[in-house]
Image (cartoon, rainbow, N blue to C red):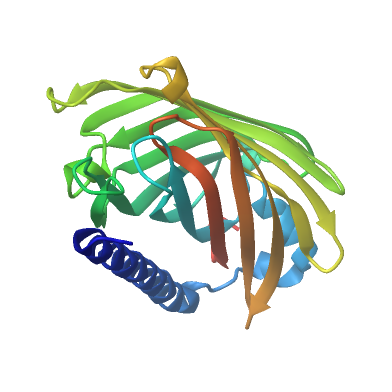
Length: 304
């Protein structure tokens, strides 16, 4: 038998989850609706086939401009809660690279990431440890990289990465200014694309009452091209929170997904869906499952 208070809490939790999915899916589809009319292709993309465009967009230092919209639905597990609880981050990432150097031999990309975050409110006084969810703006991140302008072979890039305490509520961000190095190394081939993008952040200023941060993200990419602008593969991110205890430090996921590049009118659009499963995640509370959905329309670059 479930007592009255437990039954009420269970119904409330299901209502919270339903509201969580409705709100985040509404935000996603609204953003898609607003972004699609912006996707005006350049003359270059009109002449290229979709397979070539798809390969170029797998390169973080591509010369193509795109508006990346990515939604990550996470299922969190751990000792702090009973069962699981969802969280969500919706990212908007405009990719606007600029050719630099002699005859545009290098590419400079400065990619801001604007997140809308839904995070659980942990409360050990309630039966399952989750008192609800908070939604709002998260910490803005900026990645800058410079490297050779290539579409095949070994491609590298070096730069810096930054995070700013722009979260609308404390639970949705770190409260710290953070910066550190960034580097990428890719082998762009046919049919395989293999590479890694590494970023590290140290906190150096911000709210004195918030914990210092030292975090490394290692995204590894393995993709295999298929006919008709399809590909299969994965691009999960290993994360390490260096200031945490050993059992809370690592998240190590693997995954699998599909990518398809299509045209909406004259606009090439790259679509992706992936599922990641964490082989290692923090014991108290961490991400075990991640469901990723991405749409990236190509827009006109004034440099092409």
